[in-house]
Length: 164
Image (cartoon, rainbow, N blue to C red; front, side, top):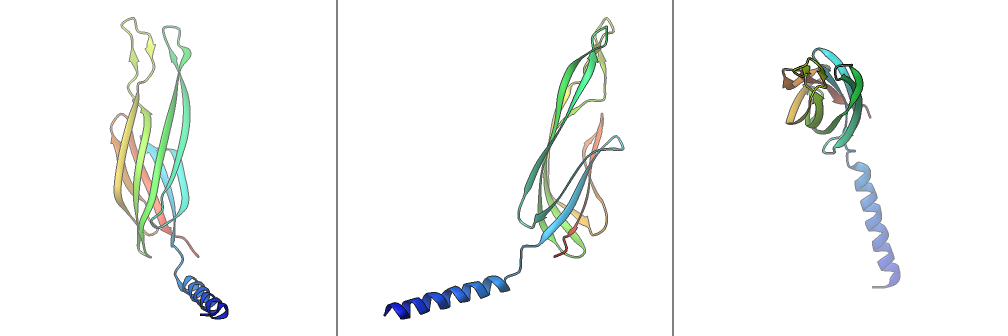
């Protein structure tokens, strides 16, 4: 094989690969929004556009300070972190299916006091939840209850195929 024949074969192969890539469908993106609802009130929102089969992880922090002791002095500082991983698994014109992993630090709604009646801070609680396939109908909200009491914690999700 001469150098010219080898070069021609490489160029033909490169042209074939370029044409195949141009004809291959682009990865379909899903636009999604997730609202965190605590005791009926939206407290946090995540949103994004993610390709099917890919995952995105985001963490939000909310620091809170509580009055403690018999003099109700601000002292108990707690970092309430929320980390979500969202992965679109399937999408068409009628629905989107999302895999969701959640890790949260929340506070119980029950306030506690010492025997003397002095305020104690709420106790932080770690919550881990996984939904392998939350189906979200097009144009509608789907709900997933993470914690059902003290406090209630619900994720509301809306998703659809992103326009090209």
